[in-house]
Length: 452
Image 1 (cartoon, rainbow, N blue to C red):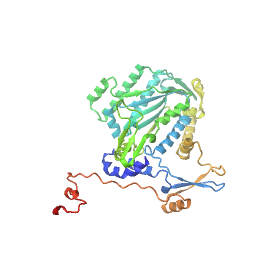
Image 2: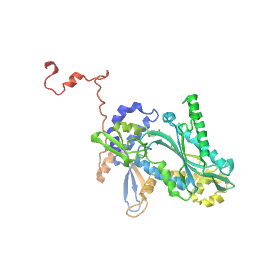
Image 3: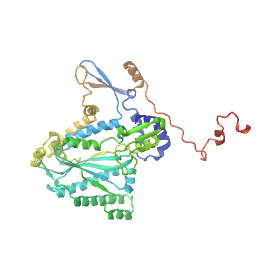
Image 4: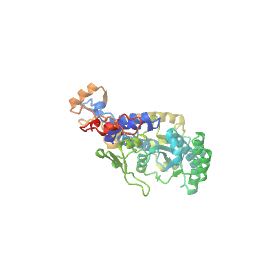
């Protein structure tokens, strides 16, 4: 992956910049350039020092770009899934809901990335009402919903859809007692009704945006499915926390699987083996590197676009959030939540505790060493000599200081550079061509054209 970006990024930016989605062009270019600097000491290091024995370690910076760096995405998936299972999602059954739009509506979501958040909100509200009518607890109860917006398909294609991990029941908090009310298995008729409701609400949203004409909306509503897909087959039992962690990692996985990617620079060819496909489709996809980068760049989200969202009992303004997150942190059992567990004395105190814990967890999540500890199960900040915890004492980004430091450590002082853009293919008949085809045809011959 690094070789592809390094060899063809400049060519891609020259030849295919106009085909970028307008709001994501700058973000994609910045992310791919940052990916070329990820983990390379020459672009900056942080110094960690053991104050007990004086041992120090110089750690290269990570790019931390979303969907642009498979390594950083893998670490982020581990940390985010661990945080969700340990701090946000209590020990109850969960069901995965997947919402996919018809192809004729995907263009508008791809053009305006903020619409993905609207789809997530529409799905969250529909699921909240769906569970409130099927489980006890009344209108004050709510489900715990963790949504992940995926921007990619299995063929390195832009395909925005919503995955939601939802508690298979509702939570209710009364007088400091949190109780969980499970919901029965949804029937085929109930799923069909829910799918129709989602279609109506999504099409109503599209009509407000003038994305489709009213005739097209009525046509999609008249069809049995209308191109919409709502899947709810995957269910995780309350005691199977490992399965819940695997499900969250799947939703947060990198856009491109490095194990299924192959690059042949001598043939100017990129090959990718998709995980799934329809019968009759090729098992191996092949592109030119510039074409592959065009597909890959469109997957990178614009800056400040949230791909993980919280709804229902986990919503930022929900009165249930403090109690639900406290139940997750304390590891309350499923039986205890069914019977009712005391989680807080007062909602005000619970909210204050929730804010403190949220700030502490956010700081820990931002600490990149947490990613390494979760992925490799090794604390990288423990001194290998004495076992004392090392602390960060400096961040070095100056070029001269980096050259001096890397030379002292015996590391490479140069850095990999992106190859310059290639010349575009010559168009002999193009009106803007500056090449004389007659002269070009005689290039390398001894006899000039006038003397032949």
